[in-house]
Length: 456
Ligand code: SF4
Ligand code: SF4
Image (tube, rainbow, N blue to C red; front, side, top):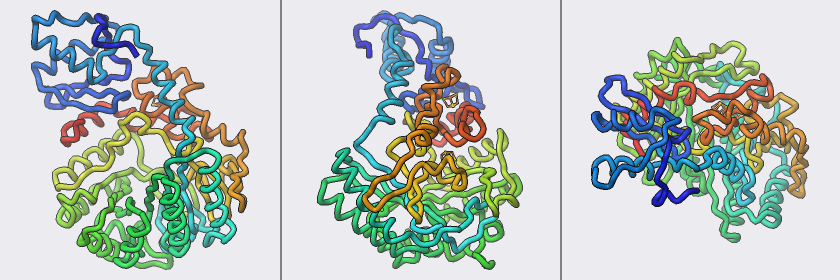
């Protein structure tokens, strides 16, 4: 990278976005190579806009005698909004992608201790065919971790418990977590774990044990207040779930344990009007507790036997609703947990990284947690010796289907964040570019982030 302290000519970064706020008295700036968002009030905002809006302009560093202009210019250089004229930003984006893909120091396992579930959500895509994880698969996972340490020298192990409902097979989680904690402590490997759970079995005793087992991140879904949640997320065989989940979370909040809970709300066009009711309730319970955050997702067409009856919600209106709900949550004292999508690498799906694997209860190795019945997702079969048995051609479909091969992505301002790999499944199944909604609706997205006070 050029030394910007001696460079005299600059140009706006190709990864900038500059937009005016709705009230029109400020601009919001974003740079996807830095992941930073700033709101700048007029008249300085207008000056920034003038400097950055034309990507082709070549700009000279102002005379140091013009102190304000010079300071503003230097700030834009330091924050990456202006780059040295000769700086090759496309090569920088290539290097960012290649660093992510080629790293051998980490292993990420998404483990399904069972595919059974105690719920039957209306939009679920799973078929619950596989029960509790087999003993030989559990042994295979332990061998896999030992092997990756021995052969690749991994320094970081990340585990995400997923299902089905993973807490239905809590003994599997206990057995493997105990191994991970001990092995990582002995070998000096950094270890972190999280769980996606419906929250019903997360009783105070189970939550305490989970925290002891190193599970620090929890994603729990509440689809609106009790009357909407209980109509889409009910028990197998029927039965309400909302009150018990809230009681479990509230008892977690009453402890001083170190964890992070993200409450996820899936919304449809029909039920989104009820979500503010949930936000008010959660605000009353968890406002100001930094361990609790919220995310909102329009219900997608996720396929599957239950999903056939669900209503998918997409497009601009869905995205605007999501942003409104985020703002609403901030007003209620809750913390939105969506910042990562704007960071470099932040919109890349785990399926696109060669060091990330989904391990199913029968030892089948997948890349994607959604397309569980697509044969192209069955990239390997874990052996008891920890060999993943990978089919390299299938692996390549997931990990090489990115911006390297897509000239359209090369000119994209969002490339450092997405790398053309937001959803490899879309490229595989539909042959189209998987632009994420946060890129498509970047203006409203960054304006909301800035007004929510999450400027970095
Ligand atoms: S490939 Fe797409 S559908 Fe699969 S986990 Fe990634 S983002 Fe989700
Ligand atoms: S897939 Fe879309 S958002 Fe992602 S890098 Fe390519 S053009 Fe940009």
